[in-house]
Length: 401
Image (cartoon, rainbow, N blue to C red; front, side, top):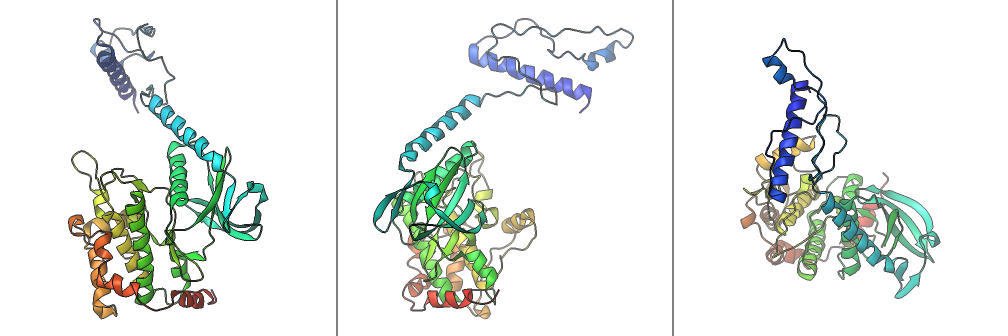
C-alpha cells in the first residue's frame, strides 16, 4: 500500500473516532485536527513542492477521549475494537456454562447404574478416526466398550458453544434413532464424550461396498430412522440438526441407524432458525445461500429435508449428485442446475422417486416438512418392510477391502 493510501486510511480512522465520540458523548471537535501520524501528508506537499517539509510531532490524545491509543498494525491503522466487551461477555457465559455442566463430569450411566470414575480409568483399545467433531477412540471401562470423542477446549467461544450444544442434545435425547451418550469428562483443555460404539458411518460404508450403492429397500429403512430422528429433535426439543449428511449417520451391526454430531444444531424460534454460518455447504439447501434484503435468511426444518434428499440420492447412485471438484463448483451447480432426481428407468420405484423429488424441491414453500413425509407411501412402505438391514449390512462389512 502506498503512502497516500496509508494516510487516507488514517484520516478515515480518525474520522470514525470523531463520529463515534459525537454519537456516544454528544460533542464534537471545534477545531481542525491534523493526523496523529508521525508521517507527513504527501498530498499537501504536492501543492507546495518547493517548500521544505517540517516534521510534525503527533498531537496529544484528548483527555476526554474514550479510546486509549493503541499499537498501529502493519497498515498503520489502529483497529477499532468496539466488540471486545461483547466477546468477553460471551466467553464468560460459555465458561459459566462449562462450570455448570462440570458437576456431572465423570458420571457414566452404564447397565442401568451410575459409575463415578475419571478419564484415566478408561482403557484405550484403538483409534476409530478423526472428523470435524474431533478425535474418536475405542475404549472400555469395566467391560463396557464405547466410542470416546475428544474435543479440545481452545478458548474460542464458537468452538465452546458447539461442544456445549453437542453435550446438551445427546444428554437430553430419548430417541432410539439418536446415538446414546453414557457420560462425559471435562478438563481445562479437553472434553471427552462417551458414546455407544457403532460399526461405521454411511459415507465410509458406501466407500467400502461393491457396487457402491445401497438397494432401495435398505435405503427405505434408513430413511425411516433418519426422518424419525429429525422429527424427534423438532417436536421433542425444538432443534434443527443443520448438518445432515452421510458421515453423521451411523449404523451398528444389528442394522440400527442413528443420527450423531449435534454441535451446530440450532434452536428453533417460532419454528425458524436465523443463523446462516452453520452446516456442510454441499448438503445445504439453496435457501441457505440466498439471504433477504436484511442480509438474513431465516429457514426451518425443510432445509434438513433437502439434506436428506441429497443423502438419499447419494446412497442410491453411490456418488454425490452434483458435479464439480471444488466446493465453489459444487455450490455453483447447486444454485444454478436443476435439483437432482431419480427415475423409474434407473430401476427405482415411483414412490421412491417422488419422495426424493419432494425433498429436493428448490421452492422451499413447496418442500414438505416431516409430518407430510411420514405419511408418504414410500415412508409407510419402508416402515413396514420386512427386509433385514442388519444381515445385509454384516454381509457387506465382511467383504474383503
